[in-house]
Length: 186
Image (spheres, rainbow, N blue to C red):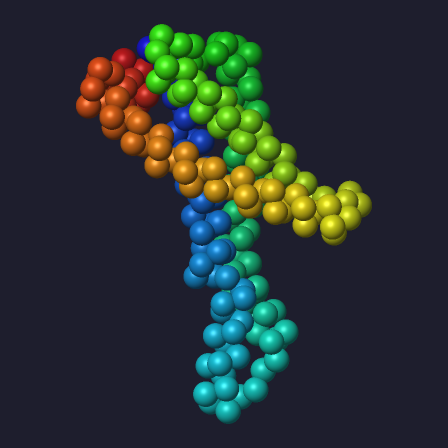
């Protein structure tokens, strides 16, 4: 299979966007979690006989992670523009994955179909989360969208290693050169 220049550029830019989004997602859930860091601040300040409220610590913890979260939003809009770019490629070139010769290839095709559905959902739900309040979307609705958005992010946590493992397995078996074809097109 030969990959067009447009599809190759999209693939590597999409990888960059997904890694950026996953990185900021993990930072938010771990090292820069406002819950964990606000509790830590209250405890550490107390060791110096400085009393701060949980609300004050929460405000500071959220302020510390805000610049990182801005990067998540930037990567999110980049991701959304790549979704639009992929639709353009699809219209221009058609389906890039059509091999249904084996059960394995059919399963890979289904996985990529799910990938594209999740990609579209993540892009649209991300925009709703970022701009929804400006358009009158209720807090309850935004909370539900956020929960689905975060749940869907775990798809990428599973997909990315599976994708990389699949590429390595293909490279080591019958599809030698798959990596170089995705880089050079040859």
